[in-house]
Amino acid sequence: MMSDDEEQPLNVDGDLLKVSIIFPNGDKYGESSRSSSGALVRSGTGKHTSSNGLVYIGEWCEDKMQGRGTLRHPSGARYEGEFRDNMFHGSGTYVFPDTSVYRGQFHKNRLEGDGTFTDAQGLVWTGEFHDTEALGLKLQHSV
Image (cartoon, rainbow, N blue to C red):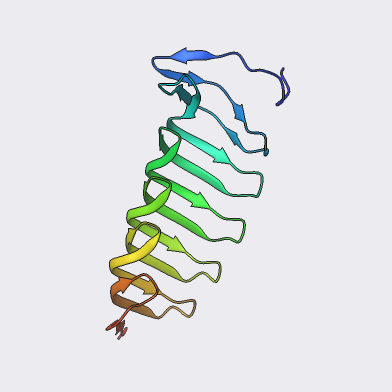
């Protein structure tokens, strides 16, 4: 059995390489491919664990979080949804450390468009969000 710092054999499956990559900062990742320059890049579906406790499980393309995935922060915050160029982009759900939840649209890591925000007390607000602004939100009443 090899230790993490020993070179791993490359198992080629089509264009994907089954190899564990351990970055100099301690981050770890599996399945990779070669870029046009020959460098190994994260590709396909995989799990990236950073040395600071961030964990991303999802789709990668050319070394970027791209497609569907889940990003978990050490604080307890979690994003599940669509990514583009390493950013929350598209439809997704963000759970804050205080357990409040935003479900809706994201644009370049910002809340953007129609969404629903449920605060830590369980009150549900709906409306249009624009980054840190959310004018005209409506509180849903339960009867």
